[in-house]
Image (cartoon, rainbow, N blue to C red; front, side, top):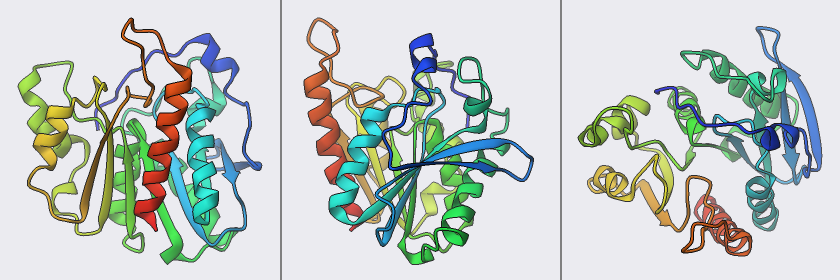
Length: 251
């Protein structure tokens, strides 16, 4: 997956360790790096593990919304903070080949299986933006996993030429075309990193195990007014609808 650089503001960095989850746990990877996870709704039988995008913004509104609907649906939700964000919330960047981030996510999977004692058949995983590419590679290797959630996948090539979008899914998600397990793909209709026509072009000939969901919103599922100003009330409602859809599909 191409390394997507997003702008990180000081406001994002100062809110990084804000916590609205039930628990926040520190874990060490095999390479000795510290990661953090938020655990929402501990003790429920089913589990959704999510990896964030590249930016070190806590984005509690998104994960709070998902976790809130998860509780109603009987899901514990675990959200990962990348090691590079824990080490340097303002200037951290992922590894060139995402190998560290894959190790971060596998560390979380091992924890929820070995320490939280989740049954393999009750674990679903997913990612947001950059996290979709990293978790896809984990999903492809971990055959015990049955369901994969892709929130705002990267499907538009903004760096070279627009026509290259046909290759982006195969570059970012190698082997996805032939996957037979269940895949949910959620794309915002105002997302410049995955334009709706590119998304629909890719998904049009896929099997019934691919479930595409085109929703309102930007790359963060936010809603802007016609003048471009962020609409917090509509964005909150949008996240709630999206979160309901995720767990309707997972159940």
